[in-house]
Length: 148
Ligand code: FES
Image (tube, rainbow, N blue to C red; front, side, top):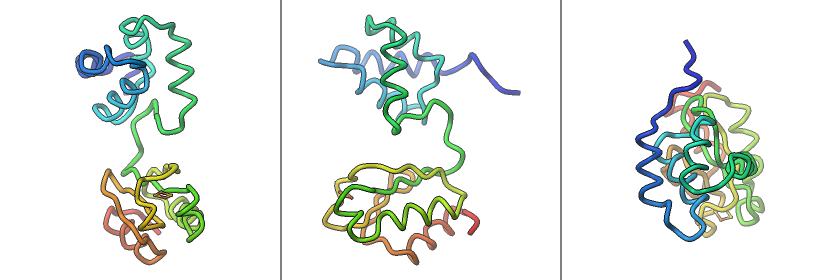
């Protein structure tokens, strides 16, 4: 059964309590909610908007503008693949295509993981990996059980 109107209001409230008074709080709050719940439920938009004195449209607009935020739980482990310049110039784009083709992970293109000196870089479930190669990527995906 799909839950369409339940989410962890308390966790969202905790993030709002911690970050709601920051200068320009919306992005830190959205990041915090995604860190806490793994995604930002659409149902939380109202709670966030109310707490930050914003319209639902404003919150929804930011939430959907940035690809980093997901409104549904990830389908499997999250693999972030950097496609910024340093990584792109040494095969990051091919790694992204390879990861997408492999399946088994939720592949998320990102722009710089702060590992430019170790390009190309990826992050799997929050764990960074530098100097990535096709073989190392395959090994990583094997480790998380992704079919190839
Ligand atoms: S450009 Fe890829 S980690 Fe910075």
